[in-house]
Length: 152
Image (cartoon, rainbow, N blue to C red; front, side, top):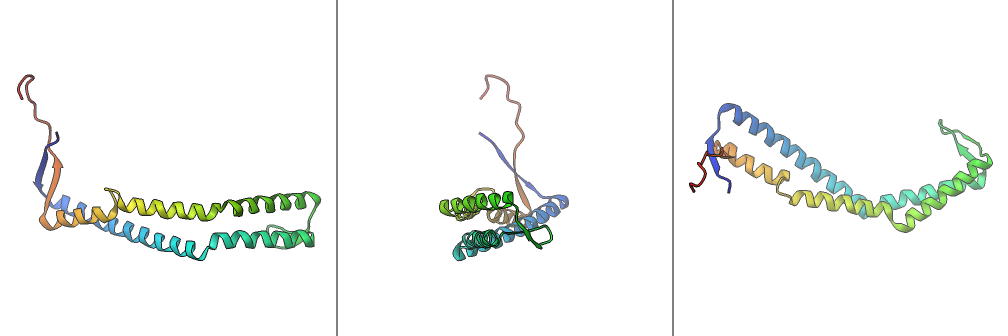
């Protein structure tokens, strides 16, 4: 069993708790914004649309027999370039069929939601830190007392 010791906060602890509170609020706001962004992406199916657009562009380039160099300029495609483009189209079709981007997006959303429910989530940290700052008291694990053997 662990003993909890409630101690008065000194000025240094108070400053430290205020900084921790601000960091927790910032992190909470960042994760909230990220969750909203991911949910909007999931709703609009952006990853799926991007793959479809890539497939369409690759097919058009393959029909024209061109590739784009590093500067974005169209250049005649070699046989190797055409084989690479065909393989890429097959790969993207497989990714689209397996719904990998959307599954990855759903996984990120679920991870963010689960992180918010954890004990060490910013939402819970904020409540604890605000209470500690308001009461100016800290709960800590009490140091172990030396109890001689056989005495309990």
